[in-house]
Each structure stands twice: as structure tokens, then as C-alpha cells.
Amino acid sequence: MKKILIFVILIVSISCNTSSPAKEDLGYQGQSSERLVVEELLFQLKSNPEVQFRVERGWHIAVVKSEHTLYSFTPENHPAHPSYVKRSVVEKDGAIYMETSAKCGAEKDICDQLLRDFIELNHSVKEKVGVQ
Image 1 (cartoon, rainbow, N blue to C red):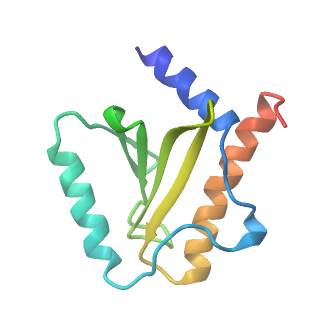
Image 2 (cartoon, rainbow, N blue to C red):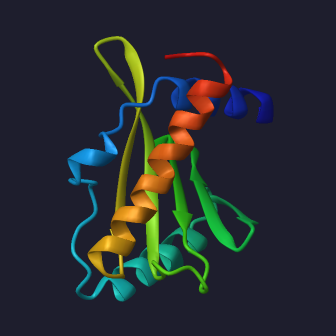
């Protein structure tokens, strides 16, 4: 099962549909009261026995298989904390894409950088496997 999940994530990363970093509409919504929104979602996900959690370099990663979604919550020492990036596998017109969105509790420039980092991660995976 773990191999299948890794394969799906790899395929999704290869086929991701993300905005260009130059566009600047990076998909996060404001920063007022984001701390509560982020903390409430983290609590809800941790309370759900169907959600798998792991910690990688301080990031809390929640995998919601039923929704084909991966949440990445920033560590406390991250400049964008409290924030999360949500990546969901979606199918459109017979192709698989990854939709990326976020809730960010920092200033706009820091939030923009958080999203750019995830976009760059998607692009680097595509380059590693030789897909344009």
C-alpha cells in the first residue's frame, strides 16, 4: 500500500498544475485570525482516526487518503507559522493534477515565499524524472 501511495504522489508531482511564481496569486487567503483556523484544522485532523500523521523536520504532515489530500503544517520556528499548505490530487479531463492552496498566518511576502517553495518542490520532482 505504501508503494502505491508513493507512486501516486510521484505521478501527481509530475503532472502538477501550479501557477507560475511570477503570477503572485498564490492561493492563500489573508492572515487575519489564521492562527485559529490553522490550529483548529490541525486539532480536527489529529482527532480523526482515518488521518495518518508524521513529523518530518518539524513539519506536521497529515495524509487524508479518502480525500487524496496532504496537509503540511509549518514548524513553530518557520517564518510563516502558523500556516499550512494543502495539496490535493484531482482529475480533470482525464489528467491528474495537484491543486495547491494554503492558509498563512504571516505577512504576504513570507506567505508568498512559502507557496513558491512548494511550487519549486513540485518543479524539482518533475525535473528529476525528466518530465517537462
